[in-house]
Length: 117
Figure 1 (cartoon, rainbow, N blue to C red):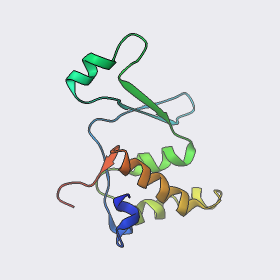
Figure 2 (figure 1 turned 120 degrees about the vertical axis):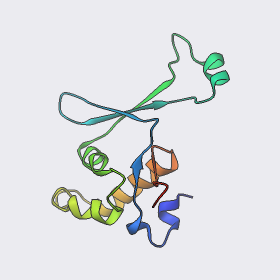
Figure 3 (figure 1 turned 120 degrees about the horizontal axis):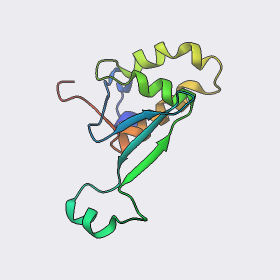
Figure 4 (figure 1 turned 135 degrees about the vertical axis):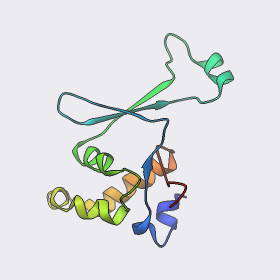
């Protein structure tokens, strides 16, 4: 289970982008997350080749991009939700969707809690 959903104070959690994740933006300004498939050197030597790259690509939609831009290691989940309220008015089940997105990012180690948080 994810720490975000299991934590009763999940709204007060501060999240930061994992150092293994690179972010690029497409022509429409939507975020594309790039992160390694394998981290162990022996797995990279064994499994990575011309056809199978070591990088996984995750294309975010408008809401995902807006959330991703606000993950800075300073804002809490509650502050992120508050700042996205305008976008959320046009999105069905905005808060639930955003929390599931953050929980998924945390579960797959694309975001983490800062050490001092």
